[in-house]
Length: 203
Image (cartoon, rainbow, N blue to C red):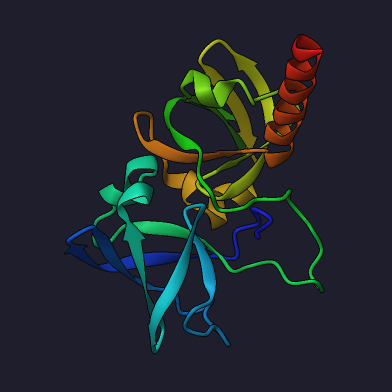
């Protein structure tokens, strides 16, 4: 489990295609600390397992399903990525509950500077937009954000200077794809309401 508070950026230094996926080697000099093989780590919002650690670099394997649902299949050497290690019981929940289970991919359709901040509009498919509510939470490339507004087919977030400086959202351009994870609470509520509706129909 994660919070969507990115702890640092890493750089992809190696990409290896596997029979049913890919292997990424990522350099993260300020983040690994006491990380261990088998530990989870969020890479651009995707929960992966560390399979190897060597100095300031670590490796993760990305399966076929993850490649289908996320942007990780398009990463190349030199790409910057957002990194977050798992939440511990002693950490404050500074963002919102993020599982690292990406729901789909969106596209940056507009960026507008608003003083030192940036207004970013992201286009997303209906299966994601159904869970997006104004002032609700959403994770974009693993960054916990508040939905500033929504309309048919897209939503917008306001990025403060700190977020722009310490995450990859600061270098995202119009046309770039981003990983989106909706608030898990919205999906639970939908499931409960569906169950109640089926009960009424069956009763």
